[in-house]
Amino acid sequence: MKEIDITKIIKLLLSHIFPILLAGVILAGAVFCYNTFWSKPVYRTSTSVLINNGGLADDSQSPNGTISQGIMSASLSLVPTCIDMMESDNIYKELAKALNDKYSYYGLQSRFSVVSRNEQSLVIDIYTYGSDISETKNIANTFLQIVPTYISNNLTGADIKIMATADKIVKTSPRTGFNTAVAFIVGVLLCSAIYIIIEFSKNTIENEKDFKARYELPLLGTVPLFENNSQGGKRRGRTK
Image (cartoon, rainbow, N blue to C red; front, side, top):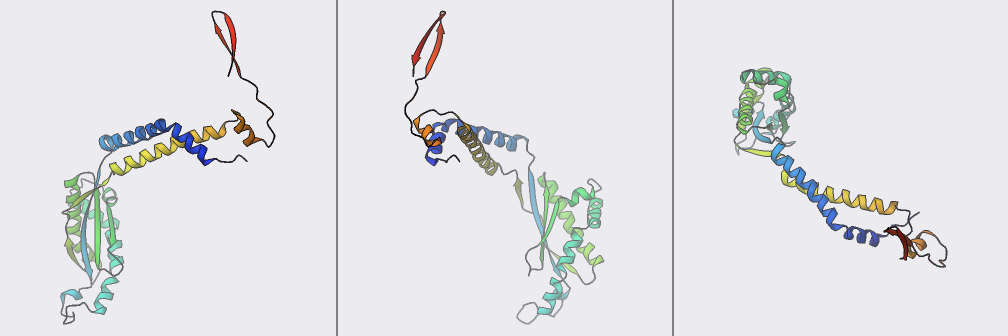
């Protein structure tokens, strides 16, 4: 089995450092141009609602302002069901109607992500995605207005309060800087791998060191290399 000489690999890569770096720059430039000029941006906005069983609105809270354990447990048990309802087809069909049927309900459904803030929270966060900022905000806020009535009509005892509307928006894709950096690293690694594969695939013995590395035999001598060059119909030989 051929031994891998780390020093030889390092020297090999250093001797080809400019082509390796150039490969990284070319791939990074291609990714940067694609993300900047051709890739469609994706934005995200978030809204949130508070789920409870109606106990938060009455006088069942303790004097110090904390929510009783019974109300908390009952409200928490509603959270998974409310999330399922906010992911169902019917609520997005209502959303499509509220938006004058400009979008298909399944197209709208794919734009939303509904998650509980944490296991012990009554707050549900609703994330809305889109390629246009104002359109994304409008869809998110329209959905937010539908949610309380839809859940209250279909889930007895559930009370939904709006906690946050779609005011802020962030760009989630493309991550131009990150993608460009990754492309540069990938380009460098790929080019380096090609040089290494070519080097270790070579079967030619170029010097005494290569011979000794391959065969456990004593080297008695070397044969000079002759080259024939033709110029003006004459041949001459020289020794390397």
